Length: 90
Image (tube, rainbow, N blue to C red; front, side, top):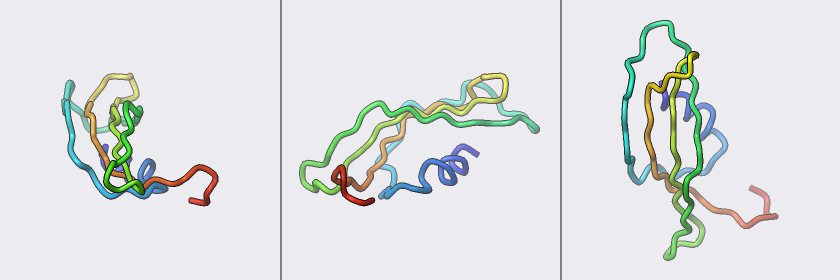
């Protein structure tokens, strides 16, 4: 469910080349039928590529919670994105 929400909402308007890896993947609480889930993405770090200046990696913290605010999944994915120059059309 987390990936579906990310693909439909977070990655829909990005130029992602895919994930480089995932750190700190945890499922701290079980998910039950009927729960309403939401996903929060926090940017932790961005690193331009030294060899290919048109791209870079972004490390985020992704948290999936139910309606009561209980965390169901936490992870820190590292994703490779295309970069653009500010002021240029995307």
